[in-house]
Image 1: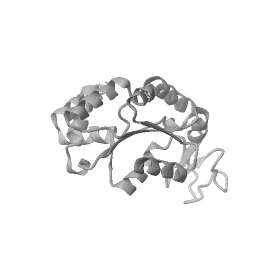
Image 2: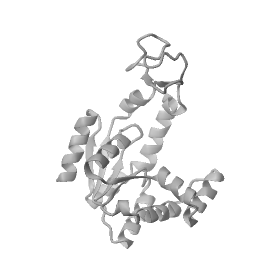
Image 3: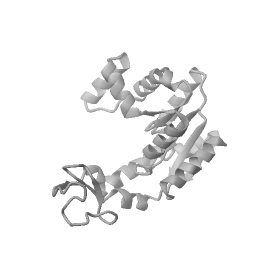
Length: 215
């Protein structure tokens, strides 16, 4: 089974991918992980990716597709895999289709985890973390019992990651809506897209995905 998970940042794709892995044995293929592995292995495509990253440029679609093609040849992908973080654009989806066709593979499911933009901003913006033990907190949802003191380790220093700032979250959502959301009608036309309500609790989302895959 070959599966793509789509959804904006913070929708819970990583969490659901791990749950699918536990239930099905499918391997999760993250674009970032595949690029790092190829660079570490010093493959031809890995060297091309390294040159682009060192130059501060985006790794080309051709290189990402070639690295993906190499990765799915490995034994752990024999029964299928979950693509996480790729494709991000229609051009990448078209390139992925060509690659799968060449390998005689078929894309079984594209699952969109649908979450309201404003809810995502609430989920992500406002998070902060203890610098001593990395315990996570959130302004409206989870503050320390004693203000300024970590519940877990008693630390008194906290940081807010740039990715957790509201302006950063909104910029990432805008990029998703501009670049990646067009994949939804693309896969809808191919008859493989299914949408899941990501506003539900994690367990309910996982159950709905499980039923969809079983069906």
